Length: 435
Image 1 (cartoon, rainbow, N blue to C red):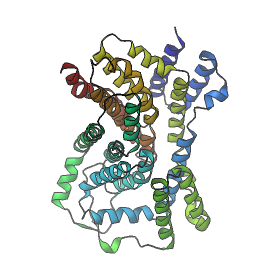
Image 2: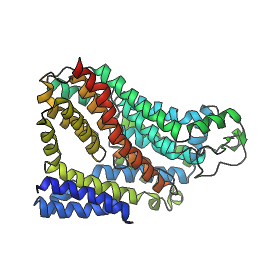
Image 3: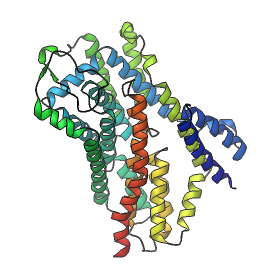
Image 4: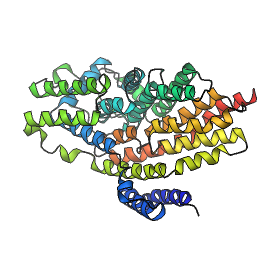
């Protein structure tokens, strides 16, 4: 049995054991990475640790720390109330507002994790306060960020179109962008309708502008009543909340305009606020989602080991030698979805398209259709809790809902991981091969 097969079997066992037994999947994955790395691949421990996602660690810690401060001092409540006023109390509109905001931010060139890191904490706070299903809200935030990223100046769009040009394949930035945005909007619509959107619409129709004397309880299910706050009940902007808002604005501008590292920038803002208002920072470090950090860090470390040791390339090479181009096209879309659910979408887009070049050059499969199908398959799975965007959603969910959000996002991610390649292949690849 080859080392690649053993490594893949161990990965499956990690998921099975963590599902059956009450053990953090990340801790188990770290142990697996050590055993497989040293015993199977024969690499040093330092090489195994080299795959630990230090950047993701800093992002998760920095962002959740900063927004824990903002929640403690009432800034998040102020933002949420203002958002309700902005949509005139129509709570059902808010998930779509978050979708559009994220799409707009990434469409002009912002990194998808940066947009999600900024929007998700507010969106999840809104969901908790107004009894919107947090899974639906998180799903729509991530899909908005993903769809926008495929604009011609978005990061995913630039990478995909660049690889296509470099490989001298025919391409269409417009088809790529509108197909990806359409897929993300469709997934969001399905999530909205199946996760309580109809009840939200009914709630808005029945009592769209009922003034609230008390805030809606946190942790309720989608569809329960959640009145709009009256103007007199709005949190006031004091010095602490004003400085926190300024800090959040600095975070947004620094990450989106100047391309500064959002994790370190969030930590810098949080530390500055802690120095100025130490009393409001008590307990905020405990609110960092350490379990999510361990889980995602462990899984990504193991998958990075597989990438470094050529297991992903081994899978791609195997697909490239499949005799039937249509079957090969489907398998490469499936591999892109599976690997991207646990690893960097950016890396997958840059790695798998070149692997498809040999059979694309035969003309038996349309290049535009396959590249678009692969791009969509590898990106819409970013709602998986093992990806950066999904992890940010889980980390910013209400503590009482966090386990449920993780499990439900994992179910959505794994379902999309299977369904998206099938549909993209059938709609975008098969017609091109038959024409």
